[in-house]
Length: 219
Length: 282
Image (cartoon, rainbow over all chains, first blue to last red; front, top):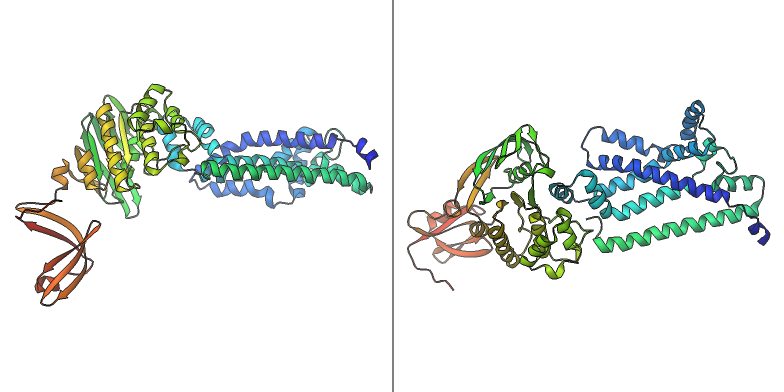
C-alpha cells in the first residue's frame, strides 16, 4: 500500500483541477451577462435560451461528446487540452448559469433601481450591488461548476481520449486502473476524489449558512 | 420650474387606461401625490425617475429629461428616490450605502447627524429597525444633492410614532436642502403636515390640485366636524336606533332615526358630520 502511495502519479489530479479551474473561470465570465439577461428579461426568447442552457443536464454526455467531436475533428481540436476546456464549458454551462440566474432573480428590483438612480451603470451595479448580495448563489455556482468539471467523465472520454499529461484526468485514470484490474491504485484515486469533493461541498454549505445569517438571505 | 406633461398607456389591474398628466411645479415645492391604488401614482414617479418609458415632455430647470420619446437615462437625472421597502444595499454598512452614491464624507456625516444615525453608521442594514432603515434610505437619496426627490409611500410600513418622527426629519431635510419633492401618500395628517400642495390622481388623470386645506378638509358650510366612515351595524335600543360606525381606527355610536335606519345599508360608506357645538379636546 505504502509503495503504491509513493509511486502515485499525481498528474491526473493536477490535470483535473487545471481543467476545472480554467473552465470555471471562462464560464463565470461568459455566464455572468447571460444569467443577468435571463434574470431581467421579459422577452419571448427567454424560454428558448433557458432550454438550450439546460440541455447538458438532460443529454447523455455521449450525445454532447459526439457532436463536439464531429465539430472538433474539422478544426483539429479533438484530443487536446484546449478542446477539453471548450467541451467542458458546454457541459458545465447550466451549473454556472442556473444558480447565478436564480440569485439575480431573487434580488430586490428596487435595490437595483436605487443603484441606477444613484448614477451607477449596469456593470457597476452588477459588480458592487448584485454580486455581493448573492454570495451564496455565487459560491454555489463556482464550486458546483468546478466540482462538476472535476467529476466529468463521458465527455472527457470522447473528446480527450486519454493522453497522459494532456487529457488524462483523474476520472479517466481511475477508469483505466479498473480496466487493468489495478484495484489498489483505483481505491486510492477514488478515495482522494471522495475526500476532496466532500470537503469542497462542506465548505460551500458552511459558507452559505454563515452568509444568509449575515445579510438575511438574498434580500 | 419643473414642467411635467406626459402620456402613457397603462395595463394595470383595472384594465387599460391612459396616464395623462400635465402640471408644473415651483422649485422647492413639496407635493403630495394622492389617489387610490391603481391610479398611476407610482408609475408617474417611475416615469419621472426614468425607470419607465413614456411620451411627452419633462423639463427640470433648463434640462430636458424627456422630449417626445427621447428620455434621459436615470443615471444622468440627479434624482433621489425613497422606496417603500427601503431598498438599501444589504452588503454595505449605513455609511457605505451613502458613500456609494457620492464619495462625499462631509455630506454623509452631516445627513447622518441630522437623522440621528451617526452612532449606527458602521452597522449593516439588516441589523436596523424599519424606521432606521427608512432614515438611511432618505439620507442616501439626498447624497447626490438631487434636483428632484421622489418618495413612494415612504412611511406606510412604519408604526404611527415612528411615522411622526420621520415626518419631522423629512421636513427638516426639506427646509435645509430646499429640494423639490414629490411624495406619494395616503395619510391626510401626513400630507397636511408636510406638503404645500396636493395633487390627486384618479384613473391616470389629475382630478384635484390645491393646497392640503382645500383638498383635504371635508367640512363645508356650517359643518364643524365631518368624518367618513363605514357603517358596521345598526342596533335597536328601546325606541331608538344606534348606528355603529368605523371612522379610521375608531368605532363610534351615532343615534339615528327609524327612517334613516331603514335607508342605510350595512357596509356602506357614510359621512358623519355635526353643526355648531363646542367640542372638548383632551
